[in-house]
Image 1 (cartoon, rainbow, N blue to C red):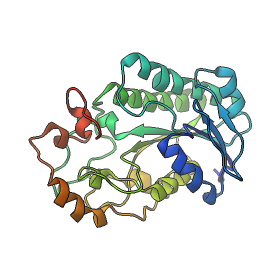
Image 2 (tube, rainbow, N blue to C red):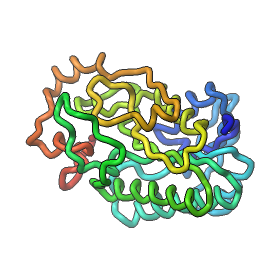
Image 3 (cartoon, helix red, strand yellow):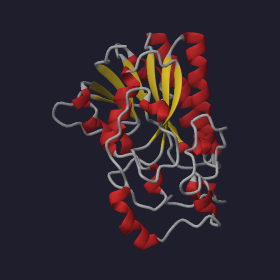
Image 4 (tube, rainbow, N blue to C red):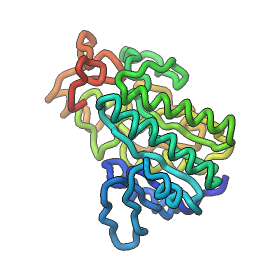
Length: 272
């Protein structure tokens, strides 16, 4: 697959979407922006579409003529099931239906580490967690990301739409917790990973973990690297300050014992 030039970016007004609006175009993309919130575009950005994913006509207009979709939209924290159902489950279904009708052949789906959140974190120095580990969602939010991965698999098998589902760790300019040292995805590496997911040939439906090349990494990045992803960043320069301020992770603490962190407490604790 040659590099697509026009990409629909859903969730373009969110935290991750805002970062990618700046970092994806240098990789050769013209972005079409979509969000339920009004987007203040900057010089050189295309006009943005303000609509909900439930607005089928607006979504179908948004996918018309694009080469691929990067689907970031949805609720990114735990919420009542009814809200998760509407935004993350029904909304993702609408994206795939719009892509199918428009003949779009590549989607990159923002999954999450919370699809496997109740997986115990590996002890220091142990083998990295493989991408094929059984799903163990930690919240309705994590459950919705598992649904999205299965939906992507279905649309590949039935309709031939290829998807890379990226189980994103935490994508911020810098890690803010000791846990995040192991799952941090720098914004620049996120753009590199999205570019690899958009351009790698013959992906079918591929699931990858999304993080930088962290010294304290918990999971296996081999399926991401197989796409051509070459992470350049590492959270380790932030480690000493974070450890001094917060202390080491405590295996007896439910918020520290699993991949999902504080999502695995009852009720989930914020921030995570």
